[in-house]
Length: 249
Image 1 (cartoon, rainbow, N blue to C red):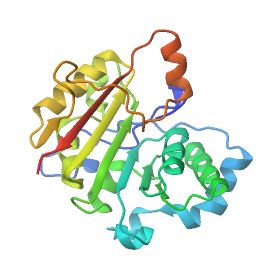
Image 2 (cartoon, rainbow, N blue to C red; image 1 turned 120 degrees about the horizontal axis):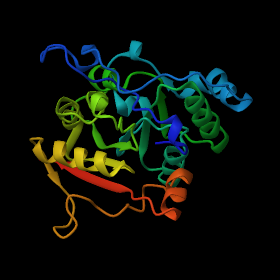
Image 3 (cartoon, helix red, strand yellow; image 1 turned 45 degrees about the vertical axis):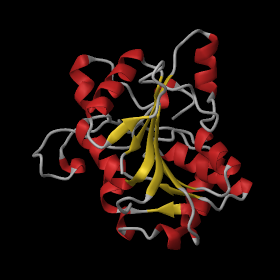
Image 4 (cartoon, one colour; image 1 turned 90 degrees about the vertical axis):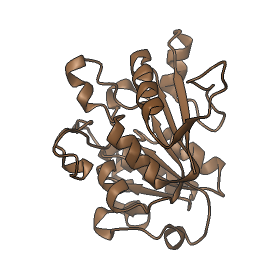
């Protein structure tokens, strides 16, 4: 989700309150807001481009056909970091509409500035808690793909409750996917990859798309751009694990 490991965020919350409470009210955040200096380009993105491409919770449930002015495949990416991967996808797939969700201002500003410079019209952005966006703004069965690339692994055991990939979250994702739509996860932490696979294999209403001889993981699909951080990790021999699960009809 980001080109540098210290900029990771999930742009969402998770944790216990009551099972009936909306996920965003359960009190445990899976991201930490970090202060950072804003460049001129990032500031321009937030101030000049946001009015055209930015979305807010206050707008409520979206009519995605009306939002983009067409009926097209829809992809949502949670925690896009500095936006490199999402920009490349939107530029390479003009017939697909993309919505990015990120809480960190520098990344949102950078993505907006770059989208404007490239003249992209198939991209919109939330600077909001992703759980609230999923619950309040995105219609059920409206997405072809939801992407979660390199979320914060929260490696200490006492912090595992902060990991975004939890049973309640993956069920919420399932409800927003169309039947046959896919939930694509990627991580460079082996222990988190195992956690993701364990949660997803136990989740009802999903099927693993991996070949039997590679399950539960799939090779990095060509449509997921290789980030600078990931490429550097590969050169150093670090592993990366992709998982793609489809919503059953």
